[in-house]
Amino acid sequence: MGRIKPKAVEMAKRPVEERIKSFDEVALGYTAEEAMKEAERCLICPKPTCVPACPVHIDIPAFIKKIQEGDFLAAVRIIKQDNPLPAVCGRVCPQEDQCEGSCVMGRKFDPISIGRLERFVADYEAKTGEVNVQPVKEKKPQKVAVVGSGPSGLVCASELAQKGYNVTVFESLHEFGGVLVYGIPQFRLPKEIVKREVEYISKLGVKFVKNFFVGRTRTLDELMEEDGFDAVFLGTGAGLPRFQGIPGENLLGIYSANEFLTRINLMRAYKFPDYDTPIKVGDTVAVIGAGNVAMDAARSALRAGAKKVMILYRRTEKEMTARAEEAENAMEEGIEFHFLVNPVRYHGDENGWVKEVEVIRMKLGEPDESGRRRPIPIEGSEFRIPVDTVIVAIGQIPSPIIAQTTKGLEVHKRWGTLVANEKTFATTKKGVFAGGDVVTGAATVILAAGAGKDAAKYIDYYLQNKDKPDIWEELTKAK
Image (tube, rainbow, N blue to C red; front, side):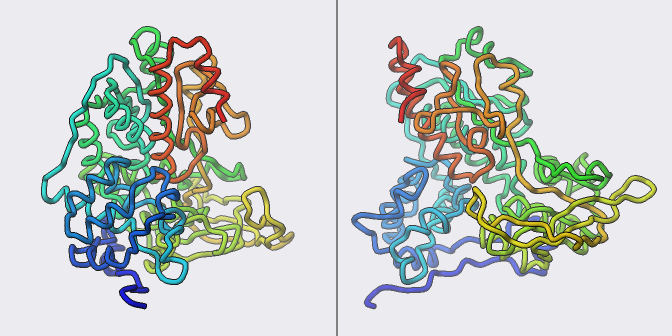
């Protein structure tokens, strides 16, 4: 096999008995020696298949070559040419479905651990304090508003700032980062890392404004017509929870995953009373769903004091949408998985608190529109499970506020997502672009980042050709 090393270098994790009692980060990252050893496995393909599989198209062979040479700062500079969030993406992106899933080495052996290498060089740069910020060559007069400071908004703002535009990011919450701060727990993505990435984008010249709810503080029309913004990018995500609409769902002790994780992550409820937001987590917790949000909620509940945490999922382990790594971590930590069950009713005590979840057993039928086999209830198979707390993690949809307060902004009636051209991200309102979860529904950080990057390209095109009478028709009808 020559120099080919079939097995990837493992990344150290905190011991299970230690991590379930703490919100400290679980994965510990590579050492310099481990990073170079893993980088040496890369073939540096002349026609790499990993790059097209990356939504932001990082030059992966080039940055890994720099790691092989021991030039870690050069490696992170290469990444930042395409992605200003390497420390974030190295931690939470589903590389196994994207760059690593397309790695040539992965056809016979373990793929190159691209995400772990990305994380390593980003963290190395932060430790050295040698953050390189390239000056903008030419400033442009136009102003662009970016609404939302999640991954799509941050990347879009970064790209536009580097093109010379005056960019302002408006965030409705009191911290920047969107889902990166309210949705993803500290043990997966430390908040100081998000803050670090935001500070880097700020150094590019982007202005950040918090506690500013577009649609309430100012409308979209006011931003454009009165405040002088020439274009707007909507990267507001999908932060509105979905419920099943079953009896008993309004009982006390039943949370949406959005509320539960926001209290834990953004409001630091796990540090109560040092922080002002409390959260009640009983001894026995049921989490409904089996995506990444469900894993985050279940593992957070365990760390917040629950003695028993269960995942209830209507399909089987094979159909789970959570990353394999996150499901594996949850299983290691003692989270119980109950497959082929679906809640049909919640039962409460005399004080209105949930005490049981009634579920029905399921079987799998033919595949549905998602490509997964459709779960079918088995009549008469209902049974009850005692619980103190329930967390519903079955998906999110966008908030309707901006669409409701903006004329001409079309929304998909079924999904509540904004209508936007798939290529250019142009919406039905002139000068307004949208990308990420607000268009696709809840997806991944890196897909949102890719949307922000691609949208910036078309925002630039629009602003440079704004005087063309048919410019918006061109952008909305592009294929």
